[in-house]
Length: 113
Ligand SMILES: [Zn+2]
Image 1 (spheres, helix red, strand yellow):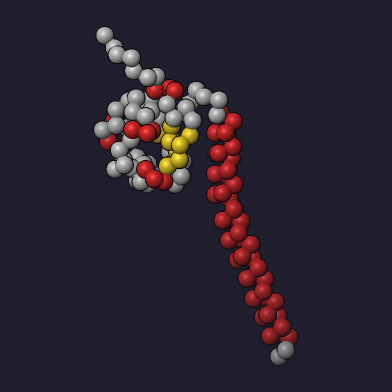
Image 2: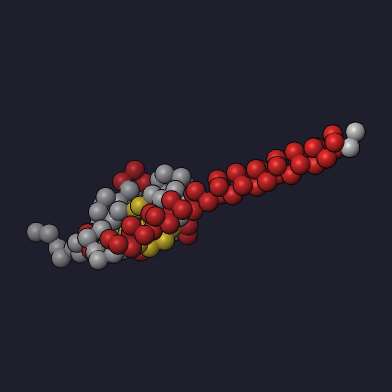
């Protein structure tokens, strides 16, 4: 009865570079008319991230769920963690340096009185 359909588990998934949402070919995106079993490559260019509405071009291809890329996936999520941490640390450092510099200048100003 069923035709020779490819196993969705072997299809590449796509990860949103903006919010980290992972498009699963196994699930598809039924609310947006993407049937289960639709590969990442077959997504229409008009498709947007269901989570943050980013366009398809902001997605990157990641391997199938049951592939040999599990380690790669871990590294990818680790990279996201570092990337989200860095701007905060940078802001903190910049603010700290500015505040210290300001206090430094003010101390000279008051000592000069
Ligand atoms: Zn997204």
